[in-house]
Length: 298
Image 1 (cartoon, helix red, strand yellow):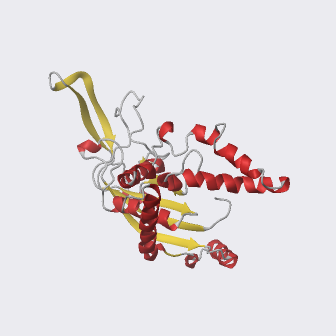
Image 2 (cartoon, helix red, strand yellow):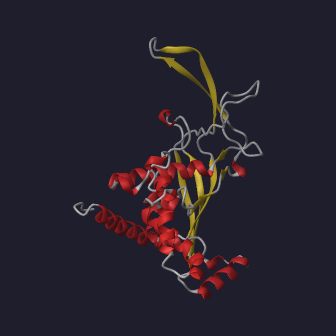
Image 3 (cartoon, helix red, strand yellow):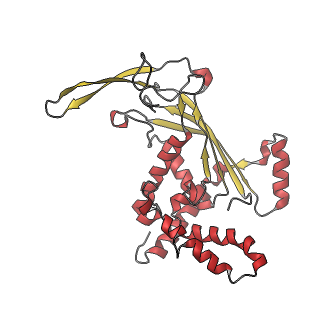
C-alpha cells in the first residue's frame, strides 16, 4: 500500500494549553525537586509526545465509530478484540495460508510479485476503519505526528508546582505518607504542531478532519489530571497543504521539482477540500454499515 506514492497532506499549526498541562515523565529520582516532573526535551523545555496527541485523537474517533457500529473500531489494547488477531493472520487456515492457496493459481514466476498485493488486499478487507488510518500490528499508520515542542520565543522556564494527596476513604482525610507534588506546564503555553498523512483515501481524510476539529473546539484533553480540569488544549491550524498525484506521473515530477526548489505552489490548500472529504466519510460509513447490518439506516 505504501510502495507507490499517491498523495500527501501536511498539517501545521499551534496547540495551546487552555488549562495547565501535565504529561508526566514518571517519578523523579532526584533528591530535590518535584516528585512528578513533566516530560522535557534536551534543552529542558516541555514536550508533548506525538504519540500522546495521536493516541488521544484515535481514542476519540474510535468512540465515535463504535457509537455508529462497534465493529468499525477494534480495541488495539486487547489482542482478542483486534479486527485481525494473530491466529487469523498466522494460523493454519489464516490469511497467510489463504494467500498461499490463491498464489497456486499463478505461474511460479508471478507469485513473488503477486504475494504482497494479495496479502495487502486481504488485510485491508478485514481491518477496522480506525486501524486503516492509525495502523495495526499488520498495517502501518498513514498518520504521523511529530513531538510537539514549545515555541522557544514564548518559553521562559515558567513551570508550576502543585500539591496532590491521596484520600483515605474511611476517614475522608489525607492518607498518611501520601502527600506529593507534581509539575505542570501553565495555561497559555503554545506548542508547534506538525503532522503528515500519506496515501490516504478521501474518507480517511474526512475522519481525520473530524478528529482535528475536536481539538480545535477544545473537546479532547491531554495528559493526566483531566478530572481536575488539567489538560484542556486548543489546536489552531495554520495550513493544510495537499498534493494528489491523480495517477499522473507528470504531476509527480512537477511536484518533486517544486519541492526541491522550495516552491509552495507544489501544494493546494486542503482547507477547500474538507467538505469533500467529510462527504466521502459519510458515504463510506453509510455503505459500510449497510453492508454489515442491512436493517440499519444511517
